[in-house]
Length: 152
Image 1 (cartoon, rainbow, N blue to C red):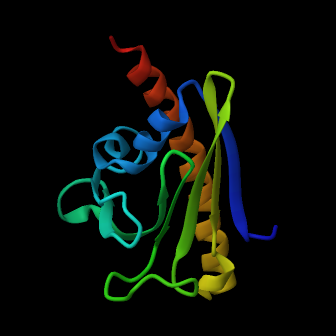
Image 2 (image 1 turned 135 degrees about the vertical axis):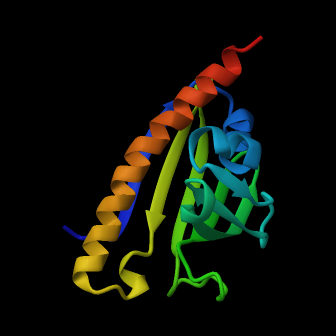
């Protein structure tokens, strides 16, 4: 296995403008991905997302690289909070949104696993954890959008 990047495509039954808000706005992010999100969806903004509650919560820094509504949202994450995110110390996540009929084709990509310089066992473990995580969370995104657009 190569462990270079994770790529997924999902169709979401909503306009790109709606999907963009769901992948970039903290109030929406909390509904399908992290338990807490403190970020501004603007290029250059830094913030954190967290998984879990209390002192055992896993807090992860995040730096927004691109905020181009309703086409693309990209950020770097999984780096030491004391450092600035770079291609050598973080993972890059991109969401590209393409109009598709009455909905949106969401193209997801996470890369940078090899660039982090992890030893082989850590690289494999991190890659597998991220695959499992995105395989869990991306369908939740689509389900959340479906509930959001069906609410009167």
